Image 1 (spheres, helix red, strand yellow):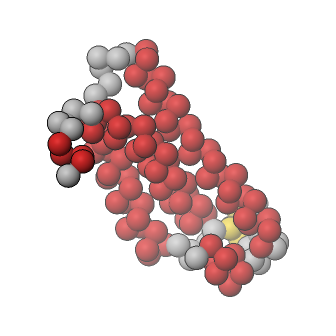
Image 2 (tube, helix red, strand yellow):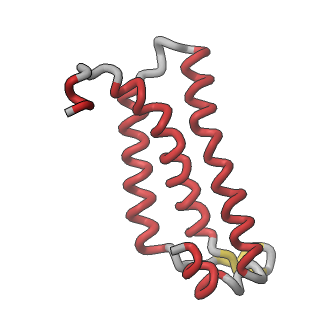
Length: 120
């Protein structure tokens, strides 16, 4: 889907398609800060950071971002005199944050279950 977005809709918004792909990839890599922050919080306050509230926050952010993305993926705004796809980048960044953080948070959460549940 990304090639369709870059060639059909976003190519002119960042000058050319390769620039959009570079910006998009760079901004999504910032989402790797989520697992780092969760790990540091767990190390600094091991008994205060519980998995279940973080799981619910991740689910709410992911569902909200997906819902908003269906309506606003093609909306643009003017930033520094040029038209940019800020909604697509912001909501995709939230989804990337959910994706990277869920890998770290769900593993200890799944460890609470008996071995029989994940296997069958």
